[in-house]
Image (cartoon, rainbow over all chains, first blue to last red; front, top):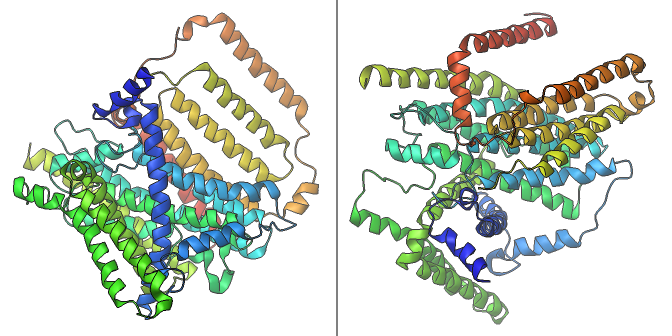
Length: 425
Length: 169
């Protein structure tokens, strides 16, 4: 028993990720935390997407289940679990069964290397970014398998579109990523890194987020990635694989119930995964805004208040809407529920003000906040942009983004070389 | 840190690869064959990981499993499966196949029994830490010329494919 406790405690004094420290117990704890956090994030995204889209279109969105529809995702999850699981008679059973599993596994496995903080990652790999791109590219296999195994026309068309789209945008995405990785090598030793934690540390050491590096080169590379990542995740305006007006639901037309919800889960966690790649490569990962310009003691104190203030702000919104709830006795339970939810958020906010907690939670908060910004962008795109036609999509990928990515890569390399050889020899 | 390159994992992955390889050539449905090939390639990537070559493993996953095999599946999916399953397959060269396989097996056994000194005594102990950087400095330093020649060859192949596929350019 004592040995076990010592084994558990031995990690706390080290400043490495559990994977690097080789501590099985903490690695499992981190995996559970990431998995749980991701599931909560997907539930929250489900609610937020419907609410925000509704408000963009001057509707109310879900209002019935729980106050302001807050319990709607849970009701949906129960509905999906209880629904009959149908497999088409002519479907290829094994492949039909494997496809959602592969998509979910690919979408969740990439989070092994996502750096929520210098030590808050499950593990740090030497090939971190390569691993993320490789494993997330496996999800297209699951989509192709789902479309083919359904043995039906709409899914097959959706799968064909999706595989063509994902393979072409992967090229532009890879070029943008390479130009960011190239920037990590601009240090005294001249060696770059592919490790996710190493990339953020390189931005910290150079005192500049890569989006601002060699302005506007970093910004253009970021733009190429930001467009390609929407196409990679099959989201609007590039959601031709599931264009409901022409293909019903695309590759998952024949799926229902729990299997369909696995596709849904995978889509949202893939969105979070690619957003965290973008945050890590260009937006400084876990670093807080203005780490150099506003450094020093008073600013550190002020920025450490942000997590708590954010939660208190959410709690204040809840209380404001509690007051605005209809006073009719039928709304009594909903009003109490909303007040309770606000109280929970407020309590979390207060806990985050404790210095011991806030110093440990800082990096995770900033990383999640940046990723949340991208998630909002995804919803915003869906609310604003009309869907592309397929030839426009291909033209965009091969004739605009690919040359842009190549040009940025060459220019970045030249400027970096000039900087090292001429300006600072 | 305890080494991951234990014999158990090697035999597990090698077993998966062999089973996957057998499935590739025995399945009548071409899509099933392609999926079995993907399993084989992923197991091979894991063996690269065991050899402390994470970069090669990552590239293997991206290029073969995520890129080339998707294009394979893309083409196969458009083939009418019902017809191709009834067609006779091109496996009438099994005599030559068996001779070639026996020769290769004999070569392996001969190398393993006679040339023991070319194998290292124990599992390699180098760390995976800077594998990627080592590969990069070799590729862009010592073997720069060969690397560039290979990429030129690929460029020629791409242009050739476009010229052959397009009627008017």
